[in-house]
Length: 158
Image 1 (cartoon, rainbow, N blue to C red):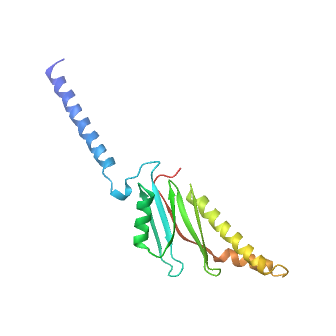
Image 2: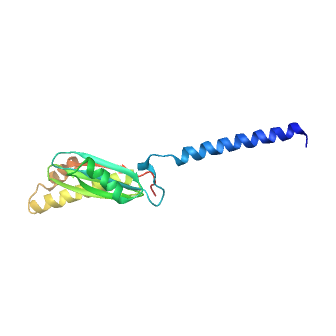
Image 3: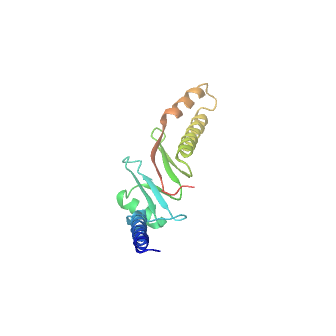
């Protein structure tokens, strides 16, 4: 090998080391709240039905940290914690209840949560109007009353 070739190889090695170091720095320096790695990405969602306040905390390495951050932000919240997933709280203002759900995909979770909320309202309404001919009106009220109060997903969702 000639001297020119050796210098060229050294330059390439230096460039590769710099690129590797840069990538290593980028992928290892994250904020403390986002330092979770599967299977340890925790999140929490919270909702206070009295005030309407919502809060969420995602991508924490422990369930305790996610819950603690959420409770500092929203002390009166009903909360749900979840791991490597999405969490949602559904609220029915007319019937004054909340339901909590978690699941792997935001779209499926939203559909499931709203569906379960409507089912609960229909069950409440049908029990109140067991021998009444207004059942179809009760179902239509359920469709407009269920709202996703808060929904959040961790970075790692399976």
